Image 1 (cartoon, rainbow, N blue to C red):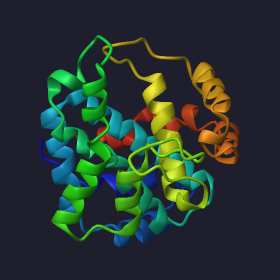
Image 2: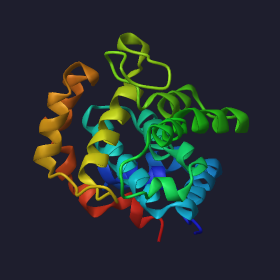
Image 3: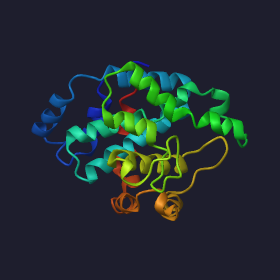
Length: 231
């Protein structure tokens, strides 16, 4: 797949309240005029490895774009967060397609293999170089939990940045509401209810903000503006 436009610029233009204003568009477009070829290369690799994984990455990026704009993040910070969200699962490109698409439950050994994907993605980005702190943190720590029960490093509380907390919520919601080989999707309402029941595992203040902002029903997400750029 060849990308002809800046996916992150498009996602921000889709959610900024002044995106329809020519001057506003010019400000954003000038700040995102140079396409990040590294992000696009990773997305191409993701698409070639597993289209379901690719669509999930798009979904998380879309949710994050809307959520960050709703919370008042600057266009620059929105861009960084969306880039991190789009690449959060690149470590799964090192996991076999057989395992990623297995319809039955995973064995203990397979679970351990699957849980390597945050470290795999982090190592790949560090080796490549040039990725900022937020990107690396999100890729490595999006399966950590605030109470320390997550992986790979068992971090918790203040050890987890706002960027990680935000993308984690978007990732959990997206995963719950998408069709997977091993289960049917939850409704948005059921997913939000389950996220509330996770208690101290996730930042409940951000879950409340995600719910009150009605991020999942945003017209920007429904239009799938990021996905449209991949055509």
